[in-house]
Amino acid sequence: MADVEKDPRWSLLSSTLPMLIDGKLVTDGPTSDIVSSRNRKVVGKFAVADAAISDKAVAAARKAAPGWAGLSGYERGKYLVKIAEIMESHAADFEFLDAVDIGKPLTAVRYSDMPVSLSALAYFAGRGQDLSSRSADLGDPHVSHRARLEPYGVVLEVLPWNGPLWTGVQRMAAILAAGNVAIMKPSELASASFSYLASLIADVLPPGVLTVLNGKGSVVGSHLVTHPDVAMVSLTGGVETGVRVLQDTAAQVKRVSLELGGKNPNIVMADADLENAIRWSAMGGFSNSGQICVCGSRILVQRPVYEEFAKGMVEAAKAQVVGDPLLETTQMGPVVGEVHFEKVWGYIDHAIKNGEGELLVGGERYTDDTRAGGWYVPPTVFGGVTPGCVIEKEEIFGPVVTLTPFDTLDEALAIANDTTFGLASGIFTSTVENAEKASRELQAGAVYVNQWFGGGMQAPAQGYKTSGLGGVGIEKYLQTKNIFTRTNGD
Ligand code: NAD
Image (cartoon, rainbow, N blue to C red; front, side):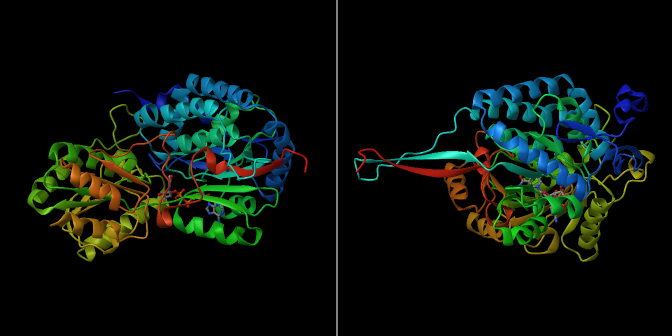
């Protein structure tokens, strides 16, 4: 087995990871520790901002905005392509940093986060050349109308910790392609990979076009959110944070877009290909240790196949290779940090203590040296869970799924929709009528049929209910101007 402690990529963490302000890498102010999820050890540092540093960065971004907006989509796109080339040539470094920092297995970054990031850069490089809007016939032959999409100027993007690279790069690419300048604020729990990206591309873009500012949400995030020169705020995170941002920006009537959490129902019908349903449901529940906003954590199973499905999920949970994210063989790493670890265990302990279903597998803390030393949580399945109880209702954001039996599709849909969230949902069935009915009636921005996960830049999904607000894709970073022109001079 490879000795991961001798990996040459540890040298990436030998100096403070920087922020990017006005085209310069900044490491000389306050710093924060990078605490590795794999063993709770401090493995490096990243630079963090304060109010004064943030103000300086916003001023530089504001100065850069008109020049960047004045470039053609093609010229902006060329910068994105260049960034993609640089990222790709350092792909192994990004794998390493996210594995060490947040515990995401190397292979997950390699086969998911990195391709998603690179394709986003390529996609938006082209998409930025195709910003068209409608023209209406107003009924007057002497008046023409056209709508023009325009950037906001300075856009703040606040990132979550669960996919710091792909969420960050995807959104950064869309912001820049739309002609805005971007201020990226990674999560304080996951700043390594984006800070490293900043160090690689500092001199690629004109100064101020891309800013990377690290720091706590309650300090740097909230300061930036209310900054008068930040024209638009986009946040990916929890619902509570989204509400806070709406409250904080209300007096400014600031443009805000929110991509928030979910507690996503997965309906398994008796007529489903069960092997397929189990495989995808395990992937949907346990990928990235359940720390994906669209994870299918609330599984509803039709009674005739309930026992067989439950058995299959237990086997799938046991088969997960849970271990050091730096090993090529690992499928599931630790969760992100101490507070989140305790939160996930809080839910598991609560469910066991209060008999919220029957614990079928998992639910016990690891005792071996590797996993007891880090923030590892085993894949955990609770069976026979009553709809509406805590573990069935709240977003746990860990490798914990609930199984609930049902009799009819109508009953399953009623349970599925009885939630304040509306991010993703899914159904496994071999009947087109079931698939169509569920696709129409599930109250969520995404419906997966006979698979879990899906989508891409071409089909960005917007959460329903509390899971989202304000648009997705490149459109969210653009405002519309309507231009009315009298053509006969009268
Ligand atoms: P979080 O809400 O704790 O933090 C998100 C970001 O907001 C962080 O960068 C944080 O520093 C910042 N922040 C916190 N308080 C702030 C404030 N007052 N003002 C400004 N910024 C502030 O979320 P998280 O724990 O990092 O991420 C997990 C959550 O994100 C889950 O609920 C998950 O479902 C959701 N998520 C949603 C999507 C999506 O596309 N809908 C994608 C990934 C994650």
